[in-house]
Image 1 (tube, protein in one colour):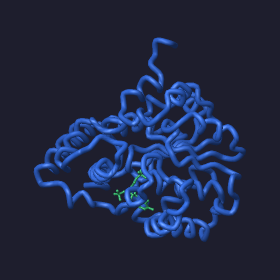
Image 2 (cartoon, rainbow, N blue to C red):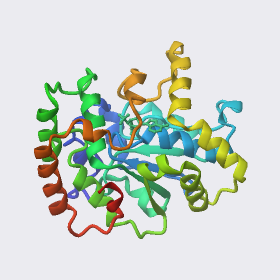
Image 3 (spheres, protein in one colour):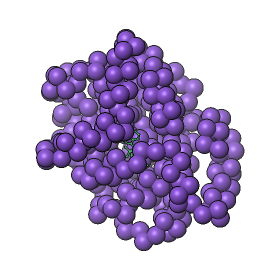
Amino acid sequence: SQNQPGVLHKFKETLFSTLSSEELLNSLDSFHAREDDVFLVSYPKSGKVYFNHISSLLCFNGCQENIPNAEITLTSPIELGDVSKFEELKMCCKRRVIPTHLSYNMLPVDIKQKQCKIIYIVRNPKDTAVSLFHYYRDNPNLPGVETWAAFLELFLKGNVVYGSWFDHILSWEDHKNDKNILFIFYEEMKKDLSKSIKKITTFLGINVSESEINHIAWKSSFKEMKNNAAKENCDPHKTICALTSNKNLVFRKGAVGDWINYFTSKQKRVFDELFTEKMKHSELMITIWY
Ligand code: A3P
């Protein structure tokens, strides 16, 4: 109904919305999903590019590079950019893998109605904050931040792109038992990528052999992806991230636990207190971070 604020209205409250055209935002609410679409959802800096790479290789049986234009992998989130991306999506004749950073309540309604498969990537919020800090610092498209301490304060208040990490994950956690939604942890992927890939293939109903899985895992290692991105530097049309062409930001460190190099003991205490308070009803396997 007209009284209910739609995706456009809610997304406009976030900082990223300035990077989307008015026309695209106006069209989001009426986005037409397909039943076999796969949506990759994450809070920014949780490993979207990493994950996007893996799932598109999977959906295309590991041979994406051999069949250009046959399928589409949207590398920028559906809510960012201009409306031409909807045209591209309409033209796509195979299974679509579509990233988004929207929280559950902002998701276009057709995606929910069609019960499209959705994979939600979770990363330790401390590492996510550090990664986002570097992104802010080196990205002219985002508001300037002077110091780590100043940025952390913004992060804890939720005054960053896409708002609070806590609100984002909690909006999705409410739906973690929906049969079309799978939660995947960045840390698990780093620990045993082949195992995570198997989980994803089962969820997506894709038949992939053990050796193909191992091959995809190898192609998706941080080192391999970073090297390949460096080789692609000379192709100005090939963008891997909507917000920056600086590949050093997209592939910065790719590590688990880098937060330890940034948080003072006081900052850790403040963070943990807020975490405990906000996540007190959460049933996610967050022990992985503590
Ligand atoms: P760091 O800044 O901690 O290095 P997103 O793609 O959602 O923006 O997330 C970016 C983060 O994912 C960055 O984290 C980046 O290095 C990491 N990343 C990208 N590719 C990766 C890979 N193949 N393996 C592990 N981490 C990866």
